Image (cartoon, rainbow, N blue to C red):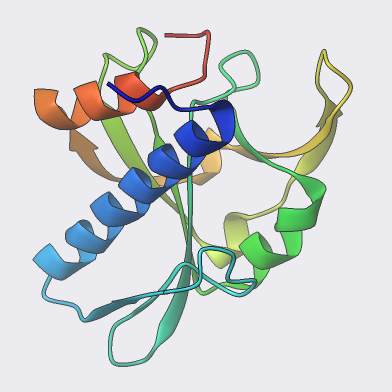
Length: 153
């Protein structure tokens, strides 16, 4: 078995989240065009005939703050896209499922907070999101658990 480093695990987690979001929209009958560029500065995918840009962030919820986080360099991208989806990875705090949340454009206000290790993060409060889907499929949950770097399992 190949051992992945932290960066590779982050890429795997993000890719899995993007694939779940693409599948969600395709199941709704919408056309989804995924970005080929891993470092696309505008979006992760385009959805529907209206070519709505979509950004997907896959992560563990910051439980104490009940919020999802992004680094300062990602905040403009998250505010500018038409559709912003956070994929909440499994943990004992969410019933060990994967949740997909949509943040409408008018609910994307953030606040900054410094983490224990000194990083500044922008927080999107979960209460401003709309739950789109809950995935309890053990194969999918296990994939996220395999690649997580979170200590909040």
